[in-house]
Image (cartoon, rainbow, N blue to C red; front, top):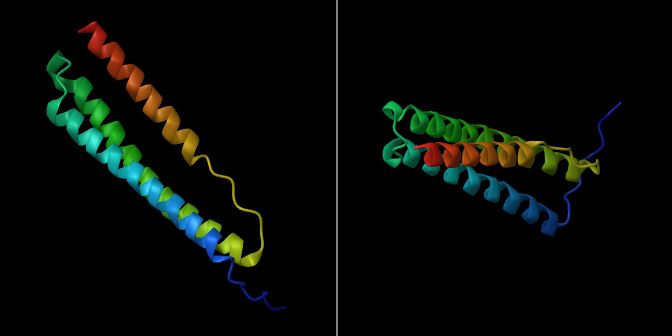
Length: 113
């Protein structure tokens, strides 16, 4: 039994998938920049450990986002070519929750200082 040939999807869907991938990469870059900036410039007292934790979390989220964005782009392209449903992702939820938690933590630490 052979696999069905892959069909090339409408170029608009392919380009939309690529734009989504690039948007995730921009988000990753923002996480890297925010994390490195937090470590370098954020002074919340207490031996700078709060800034280091915030920085490490943001850079780690940037790394995860970069890897998951590529995988999502690849899965979407495969699904479109084979006529399958697009896969479900939790990446936006993970990004939104992490950024919200880091933001609230930074706000509380700044107010506590």
